[in-house]
Image (cartoon, rainbow, N blue to C red):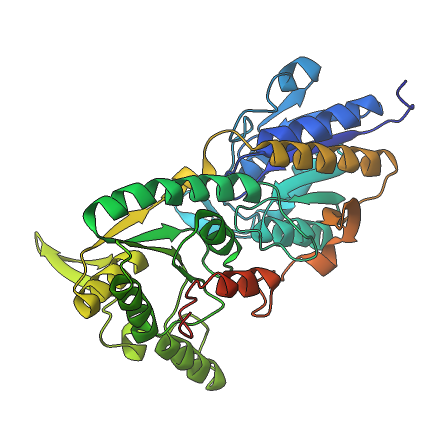
Length: 388
């Protein structure tokens, strides 16, 4: 029997979509309603809060959505303090807070990744409203939690893709580079690479030497192997690029402003083309540059597969469904106890509240001494820094 409670919460999904969002919405809503709390769904992330677009959520609305991918509330990457409005970027924090109060909310529940954690904290600090967050991202890089929902589903998708690439690679004696999401954290690429038996795994945390990778591929060829699979995260960098970035940061240059071509002239980052009097800058994907150079160095035909948003789509895995339900119901318990301004994270096998100020603003990247990396090296996977 539900304990008597009171109040109203709003719930929104922000940032990129991923499998499990609907499952979490369901978990939060059902648990909150169990405690007598009214639930209002806010459409399209923080923009929906600013534009006051919302829908009351009841049991029938969240029935049957556990296995559905995406989010029925919609999402956006808009930030309350930097929101495009009428052709200009405006600080809409006061409007967001005003609408929060008009809706008589006791807490705003935000489902999202690193950016969402920071935006929720900013609303709490600047607007004095109560917030509660849950960690969502396929990159698995939210700080202060052991895992984020959506990661397992995306890793399963990427692993299946690598499995399928094995057959076509061996049929044609090819090198295939599979580009996997992950700009600054390599959890997804590392996990899928190990699970899919990739021969080379390149992640942002370990700068790679192109010659080392080429030698590893040639050694496989000499040993009679018909193909090689490379799992490469979007944010990988060569040793030269890493050194150039370190020098730039030491000089006080903003991170990310240095050019990759300055660090490695053999890998052009931008292709220039001219159409109808306009110059267009087309950024060549990292996997394409990598495949092109490796084909030149090894003489082996190379192909590229970029999984892109396929990794975000489809239904969540059983693991994610369970994780989402646990996180969502824990959030409902905390809301009933009026425990706000925390992120519900996973520590060991427990769902725990973590002060939002501690979680927001930090990223959880792969430590270079992580057991997964040691595991990869022991099965002779080349990580790009030293030969396997």
